[in-house]
Image 1: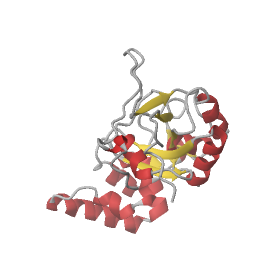
Image 2: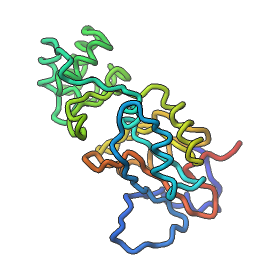
Image 3: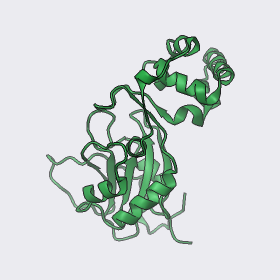
Image 4: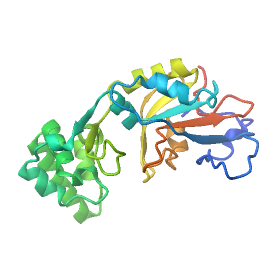
Length: 251
C-alpha cells in the first residue's frame, strides 16, 4: 500500500464508504469516497461486458474513480456457467456436502463435485481431514486453505438470480485483461472483485494504477449486495482535490 504525506487529509482517517442512499440529503464529497451501486439489466452469457458497464456508468463515473465489477457478472458474460442438473455428484460429494456449513458453497453436492473434479478426490479428502482436525484445535477454514483456487473459483447457486438460480458459476478467466478493457471503455480505473457479506473482498483483476488493498478495504461493506439487488457495478467515487487514494501514486 503506498504511503501518503501528512498533508493528505484522506489518510487521517480510514476510508469509510457505504451504499448511496437517495432518500438522505446530499452532502459535499469533500475528502471522502462514496460507493455508488449501479443497477443494470441482467448480465447474460456472451454479453459485451465493457460496453454494458460503460453505458451504465456513463453519467456517474469520473476519471479519478474506480469502477468495481462483480466477478460473477464477468464469469456469466464469459459463459463460465454450468447447469446443476448436468452434474452427477459422487458419493464423496454427497457425504462431505452434508457436513459443510449452511452458507458454504460446498454444501451443494453439485458444487463440491466440481471441486473434486478439479482438485482430485484424494486432495479433497485431505482437506476435509484437515478441516476436522482444525476444528478440534480451534482453527477454522483449513478446508479452503488446502484447496485454495480450486474451491475459491466456484460460486454455488444459492441466492443467484433467475434464470441462474440452478446454475453454478465458475471463476472468470483473465480478470486483469477484463478490468483493463473495462477501464479503456469507461475512461476510469476498473477492478474485478469477489466480495461477500462476511466482509471478505478479493480483487481478482485490476487495470493499471489501482491500489488493490485500499479498494478491497473500501468494498468491505459489500455495497454490491448479496441478494437480488442486481447491482454488479459499484463506482468508488472520489471528489477530493487530490488524487484519489484508491489509485496508486506514480513512481
